Length: 275
Length: 291
Image (tube, rainbow over all chains, first blue to last red; front, side, top):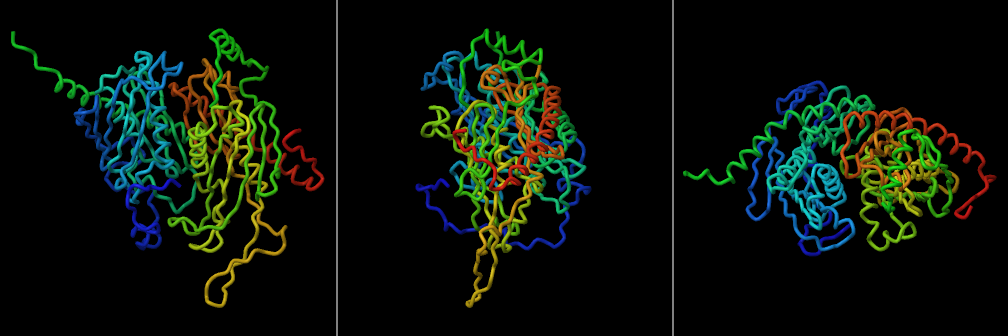
């Protein structure tokens, strides 16, 4: 386990008091009850998002997204000249992604050192964004995308993908299309779209089949899937239906993101001169 | 993964061949290469297996240790995966070169086994909240010729089948603390039920068709691949798209369906082979590493 020698850490054996809270006996996570925040089950009911571009003045492009309580921000630096001069860099640009969680973002305190889960998210982000960028237009260059999760309240990867593609568009990097992310949690026979943290991590006491989560990154106007990740245990038909639902969720989000981007461009553009 | 340089003419040749369901080595699009499996190769482990798939060779060793269970699930043991890309495979893996690939492989393995049914974790519990069995699954890549995920998952299934966990008894000693006693008989051990352990199938999209068990040359011609892990019942435990290209939703549905079919068909002959090897007992000829 990597240890952090630069910061003063608490005692090794410190634990979250939440672990000792007594859970009421017989908490059966109602699989057919209403969701905690009033949204519908089995329907494409994504949380309303708030997005704003251009918040970080020093970055080439940046974006901030809030969906329910999930808050993330993304900064894009580049295209910059790349230090390593491999053969491949001569023909097209290189994309580096980095996704980090603030230690206070999750209910359990995380560490500043990147765990393997953070690296996994960064890799997924990289795979989801790469097909959308016109990297062949930036030879010998490097584009850096940094996502910081400020509060994790469910479906973090999906919103990170959306935020990162907005930031890339804000930075003026040429792209084929925006990449939107949507995630779904399957619980028995019903599913919930854009799950919150509690919904994502609930283990239903009925250990039935068909329990899992799925995240899809989608390019809406090209109708291509650039990222797909699922875990848990699901039947193949459920998986297929879940992918279709996520695609629908992405289409619902598309107009909001487009509007936010248009607003940001209008704000940045100088007013027409009086002549 | 170690990449090969493939010329444009070769790419076109491979593409046209796959379009007509004929690959460079004569296989069909959904055929595996010759696979060899041997268990119990390393005597210091509690379970081990070596799998050779074409020129890809993978060695898995499992060691069972007694540890403290996770706070959220006090009545279950757990598995820890670690994949090491040995410098023997390619010079690129020397030093920290293979670390990125190793992390990616182990993260995917964690996701594949992240469900209630693959391994019965409750059977790994010794005493609730205090002691449990932790299975350290260490994967070593000896040779790399494409299709690492499939070879690793088959090796893990074989090694888990081969794992012999010693039986322990908890007794209270004089001061009221708990003492762990290992049983005296070295053959008195617990075996794991690997019926539900999934196998991973990698499907590479080459041109308009997909291929199973791609070699490095075929991988160089593909834009993206889909990794799907399937149990013997046909349930999908993990899917992941890898590669820098994008896929059409219809292709993904086609590939999941093919992956499920191929994965389901892989389990029955594998279990038969493992049981056959087990039944030979002392009589089976050890092939080892040089055979």
